[in-house]
Image (cartoon, rainbow, N blue to C red):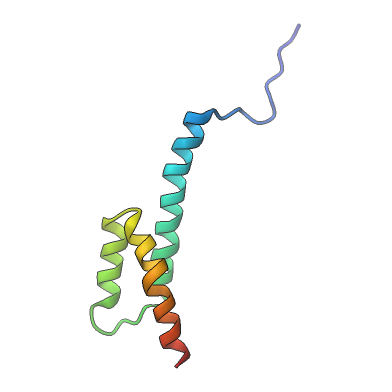
Length: 79
């Protein structure tokens, strides 16, 4: 009659929803910040502006950087 704890605690829909809307945006922000800080040119204000956009617009900023700026920067580096 002893009750065993499950090996992995059950996450309900509320917890999964919260996890998705906290971890996914944070992961995108972290990825975009690392990409920007490591690979964006320090000439001019481009790096500073993108860091501000990434930090001040939590979901939209990282998406804009990763979808718009990152491909353009990679093309510029190939030239």
